[in-house]
Length: 283
Image (cartoon, rainbow, N blue to C red; front, top):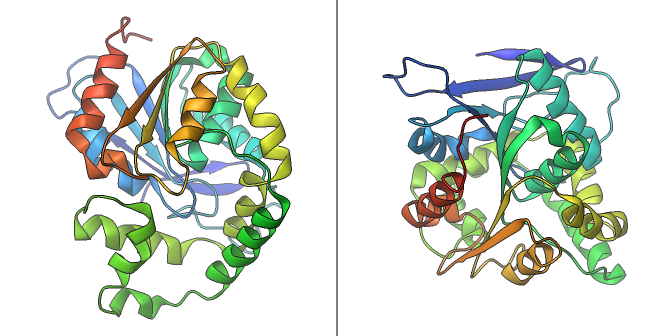
């Protein structure tokens, strides 16, 4: 299992490359969302591998990037994870890349873009946007999220229909059972401190205050993709974020929810490929 030290934590990463490739191609880095891992990006990366060398990695405390007892005491703010990405790129000698980021990962990507814009050729932000602050709703969400993370058991994987029940709020269209099971397994693997810490930092009064400014400051070509039926991050939040910046192209995919790249991969890839062909993809 390929691991690389990023700020004292072993991070899992893998390359998805086209087997017939005989020349250097631009690199696309994929960022996953809360509770997940790079695994659910694999089919998208494989579909883009003819034109890009695709890098998948699991963020600190998620998936196969396991936190050990002797790991350094790093924070769980989105900017902390953006700095992790900067170090990862340095370690892999990647000077300039494209980003394809989802949900919480798209917030991290946005912060990264505005601090390292010279390293980004273009970016795709999927299922992200601007939240409105509601103290009571946020407090209830944090409390519920804490309970969900605390009471996790491996036997969930053996419980009939557990994968369907777990993913029901995230989907409008069905996805492969293997993808549902992988996401449930990743959720069960997630480090408690990382999972809870990112709940508090990604959905917070501070995030509500800073993210509109961050979206407005983006200077690289950016595509924002929302799922029409998404109830986790409703499409209107993506529209509001894109409206803050003329450099953000907004697309809403019909009849999809929080995982449009899995629910309707053909439509998602068509939108992504059209965006990437607007300008030369060479970085």
